[in-house]
Amino acid sequence: MAGRAQVSEALADALVGSGHGEAVARLVANPGARLSEGALSRVLDKFGSREDVTTPLVHRERLPIAVAERLLMLVSDALRQRLVVCHDLPPQLAGDVILQTRERAIVGMLGEGESEADVTRLVEQLHVNRRLTPSLIVRALCMGDITFFEAAVAALVRIPLANARALIHDRGPLGLEALYVKAGLPESLFPAVRTAVTVIHETDYDGGPHDRDRFRLKVMERILTQFEHLGAIGADTLDYLIAKLEKFEAGEGRAA
Image (cartoon, rainbow, N blue to C red):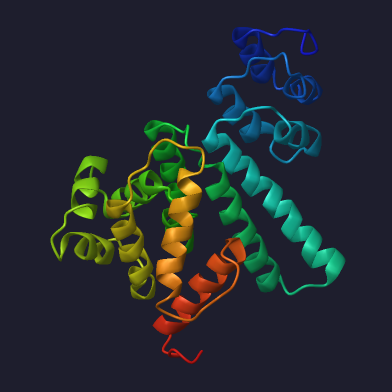
């Protein structure tokens, strides 16, 4: 049944509920199987440690963003073990590398077509599992994902999204900064956040295919002028920027 050309959502739910690992592995590898977000979550709950399940899940055409983030976490854990065991890396170093990779991937999953509800669910999942890190929040904002930033701050402060959004976009001098401080986010990253929000207020998206790219470049160029000139503006540059801002908070100064 799991290998049929077409598997209905109801049958897929029943197969997942059966607890039969081989059937579930074949089901998730079947492009004709209709799998609800709830069914996919239960698959990860029961079979997240099985490579014959997680590997085909990675290759499915489309996954709900919250499911994709959970899957990414599972894959990253396996990769961490491989790095430590096979390459004799210190566990902390391997963890830092995978954290950066995972955060890049999470931001990459935040496409323009994601609904506010989907983004909010992802933020809640990250927050509950203590993966809603300051660097992830700032990375998302600098890449143009204002909804993720708004939802993240709302979750940290425990206020409704609408209230957080109003404070973030308040043109007064204290709204954004007061909310940022209450969220417990690092002081060193606030200049980047303030710059990104300012650019958002200045930018009119015209619906073109490269809106987010133009916004990202504008934000990064504006932020980087506060520190030092760098050539390429990309994910590596953002990693460098976040690391440098964190050094400022640690008191290492502009010469760091």
